[in-house]
Image (tube, rainbow, N blue to C red):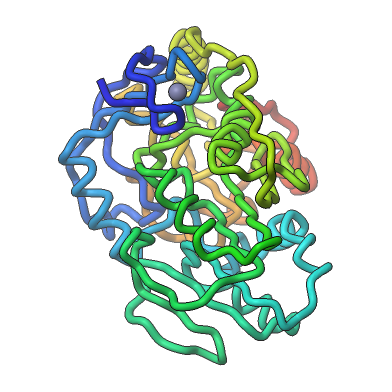
Length: 372
Ligand SMILES: [Zn+2]
C-alpha cells in the first residue's frame, strides 16, 4: 500500500476499482499513441480522507511520455478553438486577485501549458513573467516571457524570487505534492502570494459521478484537503474563489498552523458509480440517442461498460468536429436533424445547463439524461 501523499499515513481504503481502459488524452482515435489499457483504482486515506490514485509502474512510464508530448492535456487547451476560448473567462475570473498587484511584480507560473495565461497577463501589462512546463518544445524567451522547459524538481534553480506564483491544473497530476509546494515557497518573496487552481472533487465523490477518474490525475482534492496541504507548509488561505467545479485558493505564509478538519468518507462511491453506470447503460440502449461530450468521462463510461453502443456523438468543441472519437464521428448540434432523436445524454456535469439550453434553442423537444 502506498503512503497517503497528503499526510503520509500508510492505511487507505479502496473507493474505486475498475477494469483497465485506455488513457484519455483528448486526441482523436487515429492520433491515439498508446493502445494499452490501464487499471482505474482510487484509494482514500483513512486518517486524513485524501483521495489518490495508486499507479502502476507501467502507467507512470506512460504518463511521463504523455507529459513530454503535445498531448499533455485532458481537455482542449485554454485559448484554443471556441471551447478553449469559452473556458478562459471563467479562469480569469478566479485569477482576478492578481489585478490588485502593480504590473511590475514578478510572476511565476508552474505548468504553464501553451503559455496562454502568461501571454494574456502580458497583454494586461504585466512585465516580469516566467513559465515552467515540461511539454514545451524548448526553453526560450517569447515576447518578453521566459518559458523554461523543465519538470519542477528540487534541483531546478531559478536564481530569482517571485511576488506571485500560480499553477492551474497542475497539483492533481503530481505524485509528490510536497515537493512542488516546497519549491514554490522557496521562490516566493516574503509577503508573496500563491494561487492554486485544481478540480474540486467533493461533489463527484458524493454523487457517484463516473467522470471524475482520469489516469492523469493522481490527487483528487476537496477544499479541506487542499487547505490542509497548504497549512502543512505554513501557508494560510487569504482568499477563496472555489466552487463545485474547481478549487481556486490564494495563500501566503502564516504563523499558526491549523490541523485537518473531519474528512468525509467516500466508501459508497463505487456503489454509486455502479448504479449510475447501470442507468447510463439503459440510456445507451436507446436507438435514437445523442451523446453529448467527447471527453474523459465518456472514455470511462464506455471503457467500464465495455459494450458496443449505437449513438450519435456531439460536442460543442469545434476542434473536434468531423474527427473520430470512440469510433464515432463528432458532430455539431447544427448538423443534426433533431426531430429524429428522442434523448440527449449529457456527459460533462458542470456544463449540463448551457448544453440543454443550446438543444432547446435548436428546436429539440425530447428528454435529457445526465451522466453525473
Ligand atoms: Zn492522509
